[in-house]
Image (tube, rainbow, N blue to C red):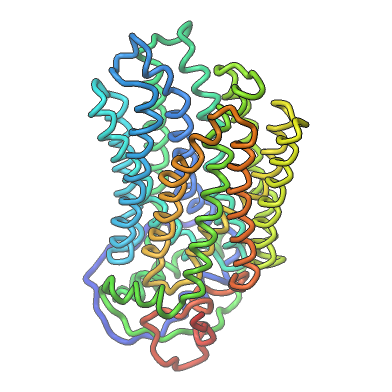
Length: 503
C-alpha cells in the first residue's frame, strides 16, 4: 500500500466558491488499513485518560504517607488536585476547541498530546504540593483539548456507515485505561517492588512512555479534508483523498465505486465565535438541549456510582481498602464491554433507539440496584455485579453523547460544540457531582446512598426521555446531510447537505 497517511505540504489558503465531492468520496470508502491507522493514532489517547484518572485516585493514599517524597494529604489529592484536573480539562476543551475549528484538526491534536506528555512528565517530578497541583491542571488542560480535536477529526475521516460504532468504541477505551490504572497501581504501590518515593513517579512515567508511542503513530494521521476544503485548501483536500483512494485500491486489488453527490462551498479562513454560538443555540436549539441532557445525565449517574464506590464497599461490606482496586477493575470491564458489544447497533438500529434505550435502561437498572441495596439484599460481589450491568448500558450511552454532539452541528462549529458540551458534562461530574454525592455516599447511612443512586438514575432517565423525542437520525448519513456547513452555497448539482434541517 502506498502511504496516503500524511497530509500534503501546507500552502497558503485561498478562498473562493468551489464544488467538491470530497465528503461523498470519504463516506464511500471501504474499511482499510488507513482507517485503522486513524483509530490507533487518535483513539488510543482515551486509554491514557482512563489510566491517568484511575491511577491518581488509587495512589492518593501513598502520596500522603511519610516517605513518599511529597508533602501532601490524601484529601488534597482527591479534592484540590482532582478539581484542578477537571478545571484544566474544561478550560483546555474550550480553548483548544476554538483553535481546532480555526487552525485545523492535525495541528491541535499534535499540540494537545504534547501538552499532556509534558505535564505528566513534570507531575512525576513533583517535589511540593503546588508543583503537583500546577501540573495536574495542565495535564487536564491537554486532555480536555484532546476531546475536541480528536472527536472532530475522527468523525470527519471515518465513513458514515461506520462512524457510530467507531466513535463509541474509541470513547469507551477510556475504561481499558481505567482497568490498567487499577491493576497498575497495585503493582506500583507494592513497597516490596518499588520504594515509597519511586513507585508513584514511575506510574506517571509509564503514561509518558505510552503517550510517546501514540505520538509516533499520530504524526502520520492527516488533516481533515473536510476542514481543508472549507478553509481554502481545496487542492490539498483533493490531493489527500486521491492518495487515500489510490492506496485502498492497491490494498483491495480493485477500483473503488464512483462517489455520488457534490457540495458547493464558499470558502473562508475563519469563523467568529459569535457565529458559532448563534448556530448551535439559535439554529439548532433542540440539538443543543439534547446535548446538554445527555452529558449532564451521564455525568450524574457516573458520579452516583463511581465517586463513592470505594467508600460504599468499605463502609457497608467491610471490603479492605487495599482490595477496592480489584472491584473497580471489574466495574471498568463492564464499562468497556458496553460500547464494544452495542456500538454496531447505533449504526444499524439507529441513534434514537439506541441512545434512548441505553440511557433509560441504565437509569431503571440503577433504581433497581438502589431498591435491592435498601432491602439489604446485596453483598460486595452482587453490588459490583449490579454496577457492571448498569454501567454496561450507561457506558454506551455516555459514549453516544460524544458521538451526538460531534455529528449534529455544522462542520465549522464541530470542535467548539464538542468542547462546550464536554466542559458542561465534565463540570457537572467533577464539580457538582462531588458536592452532591460526597456526603451521601460516605455517611454510612443506607438511605443516603440510596438517595445518591436515585438522583443519578432520575437524571439518566430524564436524558433518555429527551432522546426519545429529540435524538437525530444520523446513522449512515453524511455529516453534511445531518447539518449543512455554514459555508454551503447553492449547489450546482445534487448536494448531500441540501436536506439538512435546523432543529
